[in-house]
Image (tube, rainbow, N blue to C red):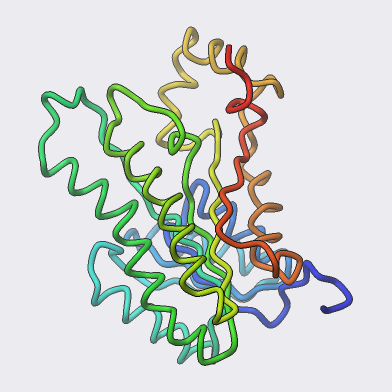
Length: 256
């Protein structure tokens, strides 16, 4: 164990969807702990802005354009990261999307888009980094789930299904790759202000219902996800695998 078991100096992390919201907060947190960051996302403008912000704070960071639903893009991102940084130690599967409509009118295209982005991409990206992690003696994979992995929802069925799948994928990969010293865990955020949750914050009745149920009495601040990400990326979690950590201010533990 290093003297500072949370120190990520010398480590390299890929963060998918790291140019905004939860992904950007996690990328920033990992950078603050010493990791070099590779932001993988589709929107090059947003990525450039996020990279500039992390660099301005004195950290090494680059961006790679990548559609996580395309296997070729994923492989290229992994190869470019290893070529530029010389190694790869951490993968954060954050890229995600949602589709809101009642299941009886939801299209198969909507379903496929959400499942391909939120679940299949996490599997394909994890598989893409496996050989490098095995070759170098281990690695860390963090999948971004959701408290909706544990709840149903009448208008966001594929999102809940995909996040439930992420939790089970996390357990299965953790078992399969534990002999290779690869720890696979998930962070399941609760109510944080993102593009996906903004409509709930704007709806006064919905917002008050959420706050009433949340023991902490508020939405989470995005930077509050950084601690869990640093823990799961560091030597501090070397004997933690297959776990899904809920970061939700207690929302999921209170029935009413």
